[in-house]
Length: 245
Image (cartoon, rainbow, N blue to C red; front, side, top):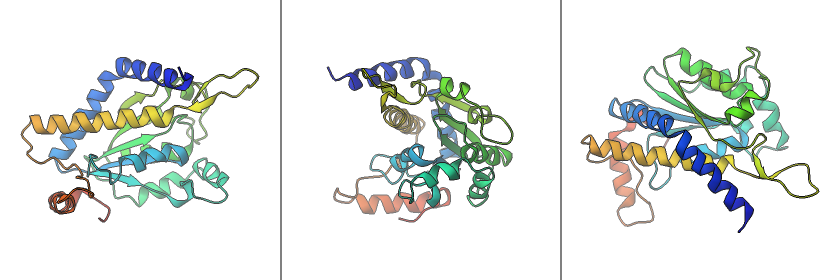
């Protein structure tokens, strides 16, 4: 058996058991937001931002998921170390957040494994300040083991309405190899994508059970008629979608 597969299964089993109630809370919040025609946003910096891309413009994904991208935090930045410097810069998250257009009743999902860097913390603080509910996907044991880099001295989980713990190892990587101090094989992307896709599935299920005939889920553009169906849904939910097709 390949050890990494085993480690991922172990973590997913723990997350399914320990985070079930928090995932259900997230599903209920997203369901209410969609029925109320609110907007849903997602943010992460550097590798944490991969989950923003996973949730965005994806066949079978939620059309109302609005990613918050900042060029300086994307992995195509050069030099790539710039992303680390920018996410550690106090004040930068507030600048990004001020341009989003958050409204009371919206939802923001913030993904940060350590939860210590100012950019995600400030995003959550700004959103909560205007009445947005914040779902934080993080690693609680990791976050509680490190000090905040934000001037307020608190980590991201302390600015959340719902916390979902990814239950990974401190430092994220999970496999210990003989003769090497640093563990290898990051888990946060695999586990985080599983958590978020499970929330999308269960939110869609709940919308259907509560009478919504056509939940705002992307059809595959590679299937006949997919583009036309997407355009109809896009028109119906245009006030909650803040990107262009």
